[in-house]
Image 1 (cartoon, rainbow, N blue to C red):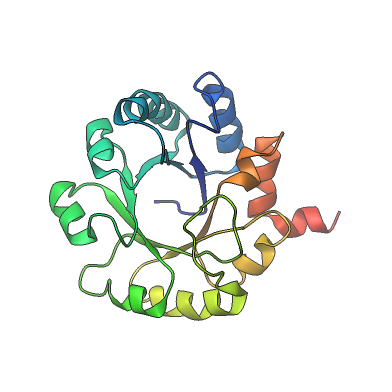
Image 2: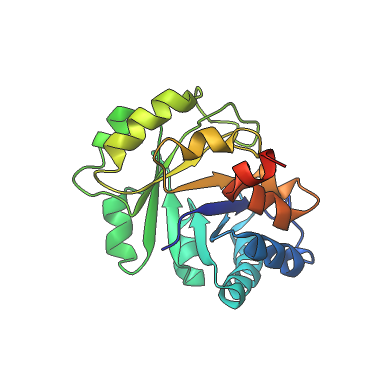
Length: 209
């Protein structure tokens, strides 16, 4: 599974009609995972929207992951599901969905070590920086702490950094030993989504121009 660039999309932020063009642009820019995250959407809305997202992910060779909702991930036969500390434990997710990739959100050493008995396929570590995209995000870890926690987590599973990451700070994040970054606004709010993805993956190339 290629973890390098996760783009989290929400039905409220990206219309159904715009999905084909936008997902194609993100794929061409180097996105590897599309994660469906609809905190305020109904189950039916998530299923209808998710079916379209899944088809497009298959078309463009992207991994399709559902955030939080194990039931929706199973119904859509998604490639994976990403759970938080208050969601269904990884151990139970594995019983229900043995073939799916499972990601787990962590923000502290305690939470990383707590996953030792049943590690996820990858950790979502953050928030690295302050973020407005997630109302319940904790205190920012900063780059140094992200590096320290990534070293511990990497012994169990690869790390995807999340939280306030954009084209201006991503180069610092790549130097912490992570395997990927996850973003929302850095791509969703960009007019040119292909270029936004390229800049997140090769910041030096753009900074040196």
